[in-house]
Length: 280
Image (tube, rainbow, N blue to C red; front, side, top):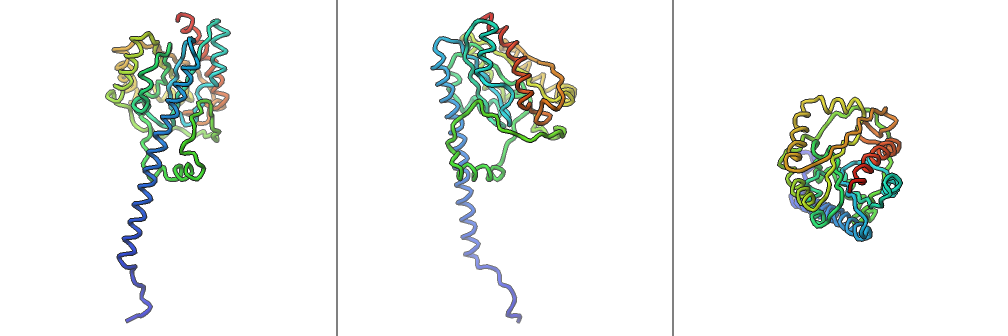
């Protein structure tokens, strides 16, 4: 018998290893839960504080989801543009959440049902593409970073615009189409707000022209229109479609505006918003 033959570790070592893995996964799951709850708690606090500070001034609430959080310029610039155009002062409140669908935002922010914005602006893409559903394993690096950098309780900063490297590649993978059943939370919110006088606006945020053409000439288009019509069937909405055909110098990638694109889109958006504010 070969005395140098390697022996397998005893079963108790494997058992300890398995227990350690379970503990680590449980801790990471707990951290993800705490971070998610804090993210929405911070957004609720920001929204409540913004509305309280607004006093009697009308509030425009903007809901959206973006990895770059760069679709709109700063709230103060939008407020100034509208004031200069209409003579009316208003307050902008922006709720952004990375890679999160509309249903999740609404279900985790009951405060949305308690407020009364003059105008609710919603990113139309949130009625089309489903947000990526990340598994716990995929989030391990960000969770560890949050833990080590003490960012589990990071405050919500609506004006923050992280820098991203430019990527000229095509959008290859979508995360599926949102089913009409997932829009019921929004219909409930929008119906409640509309009864109290809130104007509902859907905005098609620009993507690179070849992707925009692909978006509206793909098999998915039928589902996009189905979802929009599902909302419009019971709720009066105004649809903003910029139809801006910008080159890649306006984008981080074909699906997200960069700072240059953000400023150009915001100028167009403010012009349309001002027309709506005039008739408040």
